Amino acid sequence: EAGVAQSPRYKIIEKRQSVAFWCNPISGHATLYWYQQILGQGPKLLIQFQNNGVVDDSQLPKDRFSAERLKGVDSTLKIQPAKLEDSAVYLCASSYLAGGPNTQYFGPGTRLTVL
Amino acid sequence: GNSVTQMEGPVTLSEEAFLTINCTYTATGYPSLFWYVQYPGEGLQLLLKATKADDKGSNKGFEATYRKETTSFHLEKGSVQVSDSAVYFCALRAEGSNYKLTFGKGTLLTVNP
Image 1: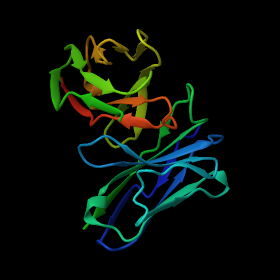
Image 2: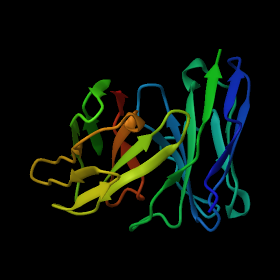
Image 3: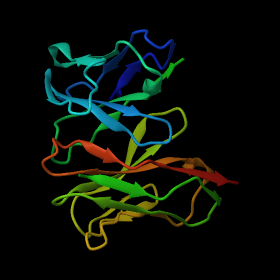
C-alpha cells in the first residue's frame, strides 16, 4: 500500500513570497490533516478535512494560510505572503476515518525555509 | 486544554542500554495515548498506542503502559540498538476534540555502538 505522498520535499523562499504544498493521502482515507512542525517542537494541527469538508481549522492563521481538498482526495496548503516564522516542516497525514482506532499515517513532510 | 509533556533531550545511550523516555499528559476525559517515532529524513510513524487505563502498548521491543493515576505513558526498551536512533514523540487524542492529536516536543535519542 502506497503511503502519504508530499511535494516538494524542500522549499526555500524569500519573506512575502507565496508557496504551495501538495499532499496525496493513502487511497480510501477520508480524513486528511495538515500539521506544522517548528524546529524543536511537536507537530501542531493546522487543519483537518473529512472528505472535502473542513472539520477543524481553529489553529490555521487564516490571514495568510489557506487549504483546500477538492474532490476529497488531494490537498493543497498555501501560504501567502510568507513570514520568517513560517519556517517549519509541514506534515500531511491521513486516516481512514477521524475517530475510533483509526491510525494517522504521516507523509515525509515539506521543509520550508523563509529567508 | 490538552497538553503533553515529555522529558527534555537529547538522550545519548550506548548500545544494549535500558531506555526510558518520560511522558505525562493533561486532558479531559479518557484520551488515547500514542508514541510516534521519526527517523532521520522520514515522516512520523506510529510506534505504539494504548486506548484505556492500564493498557500496555508494545512494538519492536518498546513498551508503554497507560497509567491514569499518574497521567503518564512512559516509553521503555530493555536493550536499545543503533537503529533506534530517532526522535520520539508522545501524543494524545482526546475525546471531543475531533480526534486531533496533541504532541509533546519530542525527545532525540542517539544510540552509540
